[in-house]
Length: 393
Image (tube, rainbow, N blue to C red; front, side, top):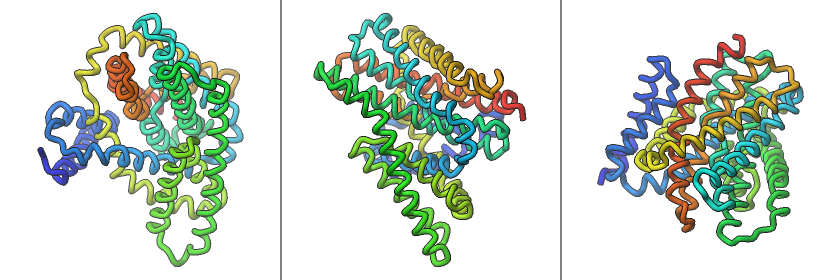
């Protein structure tokens, strides 16, 4: 068994090095970090101390908190007002269409029971904010897609997409385990979860703003950032306990701070971008590290066919969501590409069915792992390669 401090150095140093190497050859640095994590999984996973796996959920959550706060600090009210209809449609339509298509595909191809097909379909339907958000922030920083705020549209929709996917996964999981659930109440919980999450984010944002303004001169920007991240952590814990959309709440905090005080918002965004250097490496190396490639291979061609069906219907739904909008064909195509990658939710929920004793659990886990391995590089490379071309910059 390796020492924890040694394994943590390996994660940070190796992730940084592979990120730099992939960047030098024109590939996304995030992809290099995931690849390094997979290499670790294949070579030293058996010697990894349990402490790393005990800390992994918090480390991943910490990274998501940082990146979603950064996303909120980049959401402009005028841009949201201009693109509100598209952002709302992008928040739920692709997820619902892909989840429904995957439910049918799982029933027909894998012969899963309906409720098991449903939980599998909506687990696979979730996009990855951990992949999408930093990619969109990078495009915004480079001024790509600024004219029509395409990165902002995608940022606004991605976290809400996860809320719908996770909620419907939970509904079908309860149905698969018990055979009955209050479906009306469960479906009503989706908009309620969003409203409560936004409300909690507004309240937290207002309180933080008052605190920052009162002590603006007496506490440093680094200390303000520490308070912000800890507030975000508490919001996520509260959201997990009370079952509301904490991810939306995090973005709302950043949005409120930007709207009420651009000076404070830009100050915090700069500090969070520095924290992200560390958090990004840890998040994406751990995603790769936690994968079991041999499990992914168990799904075979049937699993690839199911994933292909899901992505096909998701793409159609993205095109439908962006129809009758001010976006041109190239920009709509970019939205399709940006909504492909899956990682975070699949890594978190892929093993739930197996742990709850559902007979199809091993196959569901294999599908989750395969979804990460296939869609993450496709999405990352697609965003990096086609973003500047399709968004007209």
